[in-house]
Length: 372
Length: 167
Image 1 (cartoon, one colour):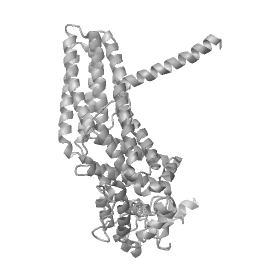
Image 2: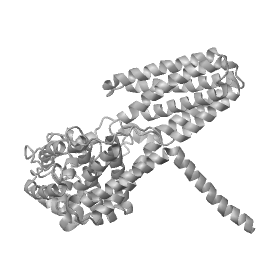
Image 3: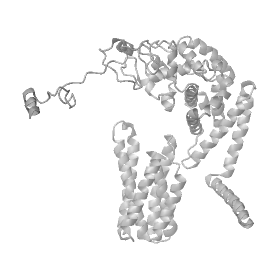
Image 4: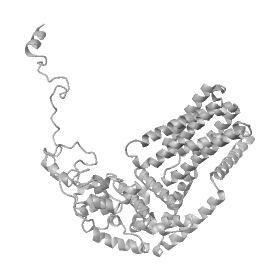
């Protein structure tokens, strides 16, 4: 009774505690969360390095890359583009994202790589980070973030640039965070930007492989050097394989390391995916139009052959990888004729089934006869 | 999307092949089945052409559908002409519905450029409906255990569509 009297005199919600309905329902708006960077240091490791400093124009990357592309060009015998993507200096210093997208436009076309078409879409004036970081406060609340945001590049574009910069250091440092840190230093980013590639060397390798895929695909397109190759499918496959090895030439010294790294459980997903994309591109380029199970056997077979050729290439010291080229021709040629001879999955499955049956018969028959 | 269509047409082709293996010499059903099989062959050729053009991966289960379709064709044909027609009706119902869903998806946003594909799918759907009408006209509903048979076959088709979309 006393409670009722109190409630009646002071109104329904006068228990002293805040109302137990949602504030918005009662007409009260919830205050926005405090801006995330209000008291924290200006730079945090992780996905928004560009917030407080505008992304710098890629610095002497052009000159560094020039040295590399000479080495790469000489190794490849000319006719192939520069060693790493985006070597052409971008048009405007600030518009890094667009430059990265145009320099590596094949990313969007191939649909592979870091961000597909997303990198091309963002202009420097875009507000929210594409990476889905903490909820963005309204522009007026935190001047630092608001001002920094105008120059904020699409996160994926920064990652691409970082990979590109880091690759220049891989011959010196190997596939390690040290290479990434050196690349970040080149770009003028703080050392904590290593966090952009949390997988470390393995992730760097994956990004590199995907970018190589994209460039090979670009070469295969009309007007590229690989598009001009005519002849039997095996010739085109050979040209594509040698083209990819040429693109790997700048890091050949560290490629053994890369293969070991790529086999590790955390990296194997990326390497397998990169190989799968590559063999699919090559078969499409070689004119494969199969729509039955041989679609899978062809690609699996080519993946195996490619890795064999790659291993041979690793220890090849001949000029211009000529010995590898000959080896590749022999290997691919014999595979092609074997494939023709076996003529289709049916024969292969039949042969496999017969082999299994014969083995089983031998094992079981032997056991049964011996009285097991 | 195209992967499922391709798998479906492959299955349909194999079903007709199985049915023809049993009923090929039937005076009425034989020519009818041959005509429907020819139309399905045209459909399959269209998808065989579209798949590599669009860099779509065929389903891993192509050998499975090949065998299963043939077995289904033979099995239903052994139930007689009416059984074969019942199988046709069931399969075509599911396939026509599936094409309809796809056309509806293609009418949505972002697919304006796909008008030729939409037209192709519409045409195929109309032809599948024709097959269904043919089946019904040929006493499919009087087949032995028609209702149960249709349910089983329709369920199998839907499972095949589900799997082909994913694998």
